[in-house]
Length: 263
Image (spheres, rainbow, N blue to C red):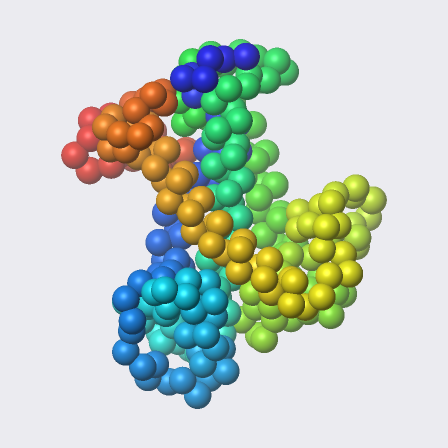
């Protein structure tokens, strides 16, 4: 095992962390802040529910949408579809961020002895470990994530569980089980231990609120790791983590770099 100061992150956490910038698009929708002006088109049911939902998430600060994302009518699909898209995006990015944050912490202290991980030094930053993985290994991870996206978005799968797409009146954050797979899968991504099996609607709603809030904090946390690793001193509290000279936002292209930073 590596020492606690050594950063050796599981490759998938770095790939997922690279996706966290997308959260900036979705998070402002319901991220709590100063009180906002009345909604311009509050007739849509999903939009009407946003202030109440935001109060439940953060009773002190309430609803805040400074970019008016909820009113942009994405792809001309209507306000309810737009709100469904943004809510699902925030929940999804929060889940990815929580997995990435935990993975970053665990892999900073654990070194896997199996190939191809055993050929990678243990005292390097997570992004550097990702950079040293074979390209084929990276594509396996990316293609698996792509499969999960298609599986969770396809109407054929959703209808088997009595659900609709989140932009068509479905539940934001819903992820189908793997029960429809050709071969049995022992665990599901959502509630793998069946802790919420048979839970009341109230308990599930309360669990979703906690998940959203935890996801918001995790998004800040994983971006803090990436910022400190790339720019030493950016997050003083994380000054003991390993640094990375490359660009964590360019997991595949070596010729793409943050403006103002050398390659």
